[in-house]
Image 1 (cartoon, rainbow, N blue to C red):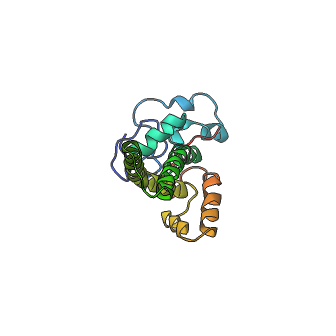
Image 2 (tube, rainbow, N blue to C red):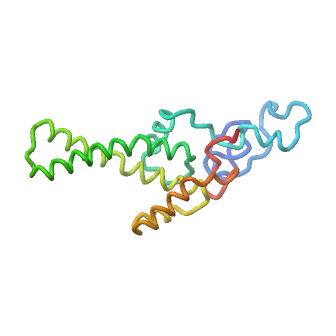
Length: 185
C-alpha cells in the first residue's frame, strides 16, 4: 500500500504510515486479519498495526540507537533511551576516572594508558551524536520539542527537569512526531 500523504510504501495492514503518521484507509489487497469476528474498539486498539514494533531487549535498543545514528526525527521509547544510558554511562565513568587519575599523576603516561585515553576519546566522539539523537527522540515521545535538550546547559535544575521528562510515560498513540514506538501491554 502507498501512503497518500508522503508516497512511501507501507505494510498492507498498517493503520498509520510509519514515515509521516498519516491515517491510512482500508487495506488494498486481502482481508485484515485483525478484523475477523466481532471486535470492539478497545480490542482493535491493542493490535500492532497502530504502533511501531517493540524493542525486545538491551541489544535491540542499542542496535536501534546506532542504526538511527543522527536521526533526530521520530520517537524513542523509555526503554530505548534508558538502555542507551545503561551502555554509555559506565564506560564514560571508567574513562573519565582514568583520565582524572592521569591528570593527578602529572601526565606520566605509559603506552597502555595512552591507548586507553585514545579509546576513551574515540568512544566519546562515537556516542556523542547518537546520544543527542536518542535524547531528542525521547523528548519527542513525550510530545515535547527537541529544543528542550538545551536545558542541559542550565546547572542542576535543567538536569532535573530533563530527568523528569525522561521518566515520563509516552504519549498514547501517534503524536506530531510520529507513531508510538512501543506497544502497550
